[in-house]
Length: 326
Image 1 (tube, rainbow, N blue to C red):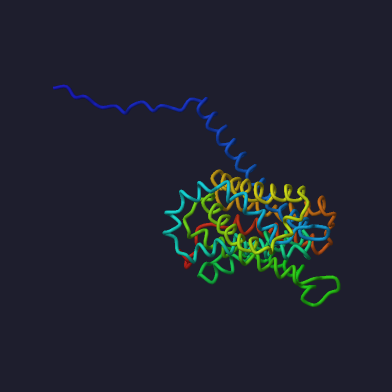
Image 2: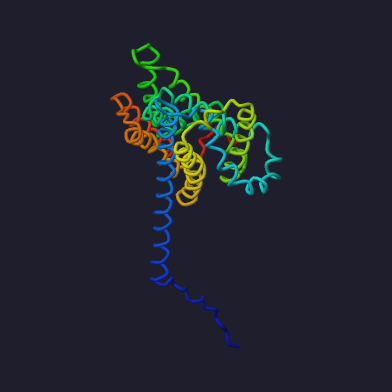
């Protein structure tokens, strides 16, 4: 009787060409993710300066007009997306939908635009995109989440930025308006509500933009039908075109899509860390568009908030023991 012994099949090694092609695809994906994250951060940061250009000084647009220009374009462009998402939207808790609308729709834009009537672009960059992680952390802490050391350091830097800017306003320093700062911090809190609702709603990026834009456009329609938004129709057509394109197309469509690409290519925390560049983008755009040269306090706040945002997002890891799993 002969005995046959089964030998293992020879291991096929990947050809060097395949390994090189795989490395190239990974580098290309990384480059695309970084580029998309940079684009989203730059667009959203510059949007603050663009909004201030429209509503302050010689600007002819009111906060209501900025909101209309912001949401009309995405509403029309994403109507097919909204129609497909209707069955899913009907199954979502109405409170979550309300949080998306309040934190990302008309109320949010009105509060931001009103704050930018008095606060400068650099200050807005530090107090809005620069403080959103702090607002989110406060809400998360109320829900039982714990934070690691890196996130705590980042949150401390953001709190320092707020203190540098808001402190003089609280003590009544001359030439410092507290109202604009208060409105921007309120907008940061609204954004935290939006993020909290977004995490639980289970909607895709375009579905969220479609819902929020449509709900906002519907909420603005009665105001304009009642004749309360006549300022938009009296504004120069050049201003309407410029702000309409930037608010609707760049900030409303391109930036969310770019951020979604960055999240897919880099991961959520890594993509969000690029948001640390938004305060600097707002500052630089404010210098170019408005001639607003930030003072020392504003610069310190911009740098501190930018570093804080980066640390908070890069410090996100697995939930700590006792963290909320809701």
